Length: 73
Image (cartoon, rainbow, N blue to C red):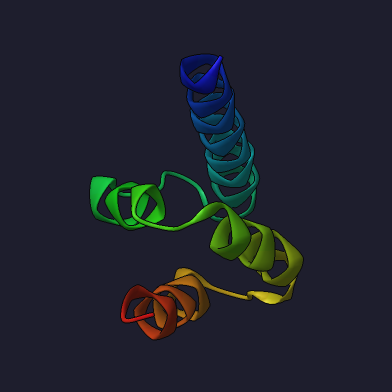
């Protein structure tokens, strides 16, 4: 049962990341592999925070700044 819970959490994490990439791509165009790599490193809570903030971004520079602030946490 623990394996299923872990797999479920991982699936939810991947789903959150996929939605974020889709929204960012829709807003800014192609998202670089470097940025998607940074998204891979975020926790579920950080992905939730990013979702709350991404609509305030006016450029990819805003996203990159947000990611740099959250990579060290």
